[in-house]
Length: 426
Image (cartoon, rainbow, N blue to C red; front, top):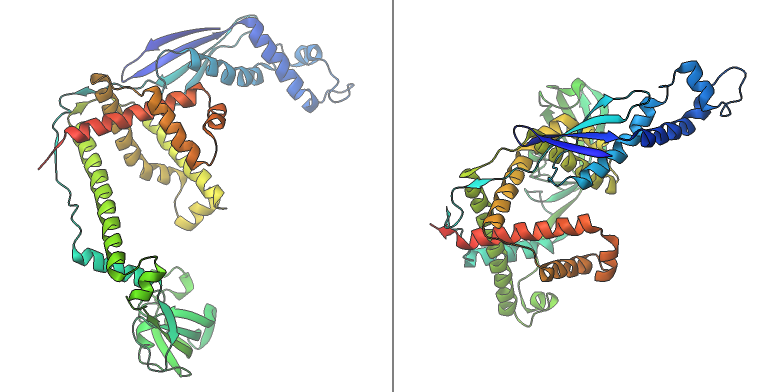
């Protein structure tokens, strides 16, 4: 097999791949064996007709299209491995020669990883991000902790905003009950706006075991066509009213959290907040520095590269949904999106990430930043710990391409650390 590469404009390239006649002949034989049981010729048992008979009846090139579909992925994989350029898109395949007695020739149009030209990457000026933790921040965090352990306690008083009521209800339009308008022992938090506008407000002031009517009008944009803009009456009955009670911030609460005193608990909370704010500030600074880096960089990013990365991102998201028991068809039904719209939404973020990576690759090149063996060992040790396995077993599972990709990621992170540490805050 021979491969010729021709560089095109905008970091695109055309690979011309020629497969020897004998290799293509092997693919034709495989295509025959794959399809012979599907071919029905009078006078022959299904699957027993010879390739020669089939080709005599339908032509010498009868199996060529299937043979091409067999050989192209295999030949492309070899060409990809042999190519010294870094290919960053799926190939656009076009068959050139598919004739009896000739080598099989096809082309693959691909994007090559672009290079960035940097005007400046040291001393980039970015905003200084606040890392101070105030007493108000600590009190707010304490409130969240207390609310997380709040209990719903039954009370005998009128319902008010924030209470949870256990409710029976049945809705009527023009005196006729409608589908989906009935519920029993339904827990409803007043003020949550989870019911039709105006519904929850009319429950405020009601008592347990009270019967009453709620009058509402369905919004014009309501999802059920037959109810849009219609006036409705809900017959309601409150079984129980519950209020949210927070625990006391005292020594017992601190003890439950594993501390000897409230002051010790607060000190630990402040330290966690300081660590979190410092991490958030670092992330914001990294993003701001990369934005500045890309802003002054010159690069020509091929559309094919962005399209490939966007498609890959959507495919990965679909896989995550499958792990959660949800298909993409269900996701599109629930969200009203399509694959095209999802890709359109994902594209700006993907393009930004690609440009940032290309700019950081240029920094790594300029500063001769490399991923050392020690860097790789540390990364693999962290991964092994994350996946709860041994480093040697992890290495066995990975091939050279995966290790090469990890080294590349390490190199990019080191370049990011370099430009962030050199940046100036204003």
